[in-house]
Length: 357
Image 1 (tube, helix red, strand yellow):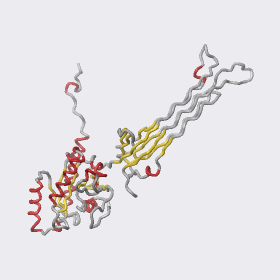
Image 2: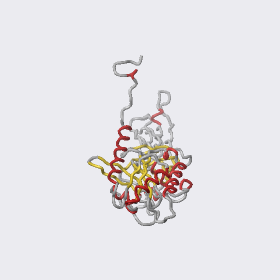
Image 3: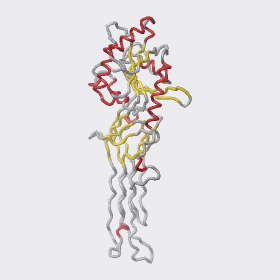
Image 4: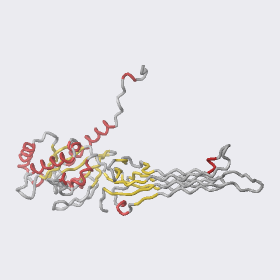
């Protein structure tokens, strides 16, 4: 299935039903009084985060979504039935924004989370509502209120713990296939990856993390060059970025250091917050470098790149060095999860046994 991470939809909640003007007509009751009921509520439009979905492609072919209107009120004190609600299933990580203003309205982050994106209109009042001691035969009624209508932009940011950065053909797809259950397309030409791939990496029992691979970046990506700029948004929720570098390019004129610096520059231009995320350097394809030259090649790269962070030497093809990297990633991700879920510190002034006064 084609990966779609952006769509536009029009939604309309149901209008409320109109109130009714009616009077009771029964034998031997000359003045039966008003008995017009209220109109029913219009149907709401809900969105639910479905963990079984990973694309917005369904909304490309079905743009208009409209709930039913409420029924009109009837005589004999009968209120109109409420309109049927509709529920739209969306992938976890979907952001809903106003298509006209760009304002972010909702965000689905938790599987099973349900939000109301358009409320149905209330039903109108029947003449029974207007009965009083001085107005015993009211003929007033009110129409139903219109339901909310919105033009929405849907944008999907995948929920992953680790994101892969790198030039096309750096070996990102080979790496994610080697360490996870993902099976992306792998070939010996650039831009093999055309859409993000997610993979679950199992470290041990109840120990796992999610890694995301996006299309490779090229110089000018922040201005729209290549494919990777379309999917950089998917890295904004990650806890760690792995900068994968091809240490054995097919063309001798290609300088891995220059390529790595170009990636970092594009990342900074696109989003300062993304640039500031923890980032590790992963030197790949070292199986294609003679063993006696590897140490000097790695040392020279780190020196010229002026890198001070963690460095991992791997071969995604042979899985050499992948296991230590996977374990280090899990420890980092797990530590961040614990820190995020840690209970907030209690102000000593409001500690147990002490009053605010």
